[in-house]
Image 1 (cartoon, rainbow, N blue to C red):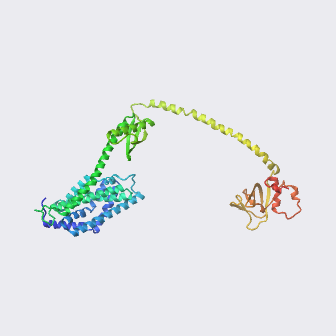
Image 2: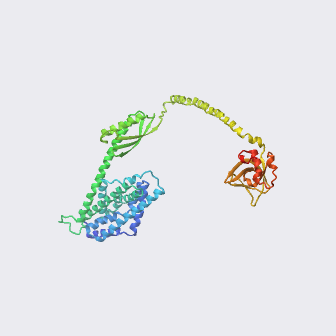
Image 3: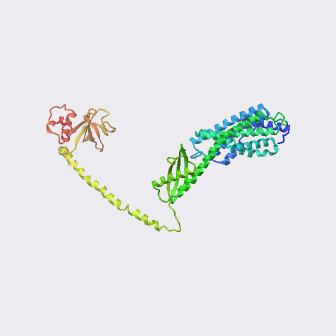
Length: 502
């Protein structure tokens, strides 16, 4: 690669100083690009995410780190590092707040994290290769003014802002696996792009020491190469694990498809897998014409376990190595060339069989209603005890309100209950047969002329009854209280107070 002129080196250095300086324009673009990228990730829209990549200003500080490490520009190194760290924290904070707001006030609904989010949680050596190629292209395009139009495409390829937004989304939803994977992807892109920029600027002659005749590489370049090589270790490990999971999933799909189709009239709709230790748990959704029996599910589970053992997906014995849960969906196949007359015959037999059963079940239900009539025979046992009541008191007694003191007695719905009326002195009431003693106070059930039935304390009533006993009325004492006048009425109507019977 041919070194560029000294004047062009100065222009590139000044340009990167301005682009890497953490000013208001830089942070405004971070806020806007982060908002766009977060909305694109939550809505699972690749077009919106691409728009955020074009606005994101994080590429310039990373390339500035590469230039500062090869030229020894301390000011550029300080500005680029500060801008990168502040932009990183600001992007994670904004994406976290947006995702948290969507979690509690969902303006974008999804059952699981979108695919655009999950795709940025599994970095691999392929991502490192893309970042290396993108860093080389970005640094070379900045150094060469005639090809600077390629920078938007480089920004799309390297994708710096979406991983940062994925970190915030993972934190908001409590998914540490998503946060860790996205952070590893961002570190991979950052370190690899900085290394690629350092390599390009070294080749273009930005190094302060002469390139010609010098076999020793700058220390900053060697350090960047070492960090990039170290990143290959976790990326390779993750890639191997993902590749192995993909191979196992393909083998599982082949076995399930083969074993399900072995059953007549069965069709696999979908399946999900989950490993719990050494046990593989499968959730199958199967479409069938006829209902499956329990033994069919046992046979399918054994067949799948044997097939996976042959494929090498399972290790050890078949016993307890696979747990299958089957979601059966019953369907009917319709063929326009075959008339449905044959299928109507069994349906008629099923509809006719329930006919006699309701008539048989109705006859025993009617029988209990008639057999309950003997229970009425218990009433004659009660009538002899209550027969003295109607014979002695053929008509209700009459009560007159007396001894009224303002505001007057109250008629209540039950003894001590809510008030339903106010009584006045001399008011005539019909005394009914209710009698209760509550908290030492005798209450009498009465009815006024308006038809209201309630309870009044006995002390406010003078009761007159046509069936009262004569010896009580001939009492010479004029100071008989209202309680004594109630005695003949009570003896004629009830046997609740035997002590007051003359």
